[in-house]
Image (cartoon, protein in one colour):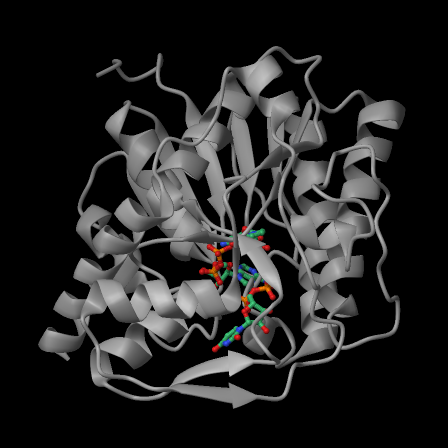
Length: 319
Ligand code: NAD
Ligand code: UDP
């Protein structure tokens, strides 16, 4: 572990959430000092409770749509609800979080001359006409639909990152994250992997929206966090945007069948209406991340589901 004064000081916004808490574990393990700023909208103190007494960890309850003054060397900007159910709950606040959050964190990075990482998303590609999705594709996004608060908020945040880079020379790192799953997703998160596992373990019907032919590519959280850190640690001239995700592509029906098989559940499948603007297909082209970071995911869906199922089994047993 590095001595005081040699330690990197890192701010993680949204650090009490699913991805943020795993990222903080990795940063603390390598000796960084971490400040977690989170308004606990979808995150939970339980995700970071094991760090509460750690001398290199500090939690601040803070909404990123307001300015924040701290002294750090690096900023990971993850604050934003990621599940459609939650980001559509208060869509105006979702846009405020993405846009004002980006401005506030970029202003902080500019003042401190700190590197700043943005958790962008495959949603910038919308319902894509190019498959698999490559970074040079500009996307097919509805600007006025129910997903727009998230999609357009994240697109505007990317615009801000690249304008702060060009106008003020801020050192930026933009990752476009594809669907990621794993332990510490909230049981009521509403995203497909956690929904299906919780339903299967409770013996409740598995809810497939639409006919289940839409596809997604699922990345296990440890692989993704490894990509975050490699991107942040890369040379300053590597700005991204870089796709980070697992290129294994599955229909939602295939996912449901796998979860039922791997949990040994007796759950039946129930079909529900498809929400509007639900993308029909999604798979990352990760050749740029492989070339620039030497990164590619190593945990296949079956192995990642095993670990995630074990986590939810323990959570439900303790509840
Ligand atoms: P999450 O909902 O578990 O975590 C988001 C965190 O941000 C929560 O702790 C929440 O309380 C916090 N937050 C929300 N609004 C805030 C605000 N205004 N101020 C401060 N904190 C706020 O979701 P996650 O899956 O961990 O996602 C983390 C980031 O990664 C998000 O920016 C999300 O858009 C992005 N992302 C995630 C995925 C994925 O599949 N998990 C895919 C693409 C992008
Ligand atoms: N989905 C589903 N049943 C659920 C939750 C989600 O069929 O209980 C579908 C959803 O319509 C979408 C896919 O699974 O097509 C992935 O949804 P999720 O909310 O996880 O993320 P998205 O990629 O849509 O943001």
